Image (cartoon, rainbow, N blue to C red; front, side, top):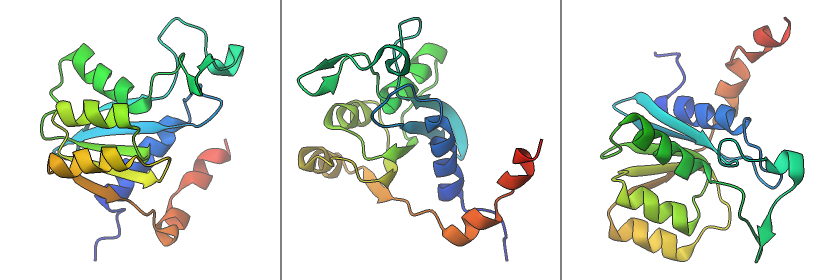
Length: 158
């Protein structure tokens, strides 16, 4: 029997780790784009490079939304654009259900599957667009038994 962590949990844990770089005070989100079991990009929610961060100056709120923050999914897509990596037929692993705007960008970029860990203000319209485009939507559940077997503690002792 294969004792290795399943691919879905492996890539989701990458997204969780990436979320630790978030500079958003409200929610830390991480995203990983994968094609053929290879990570091609990642992103976390935060400010435009070179701008102040919400963790330093507070959120720039207008109508209940922070204008300073770029969502993790958008940052991952932008990383693909910046470095010339195609997103067509790739998968997204994201810690939280994508907002409507991110969903639209993901669908337009050719993402074939959206994997998410937690529900977060799930948009019924986003779900209907995902269904319309025949994109697979999958909620990933991290297996607590596998989580306990991960060797994280060995890294904490140094």
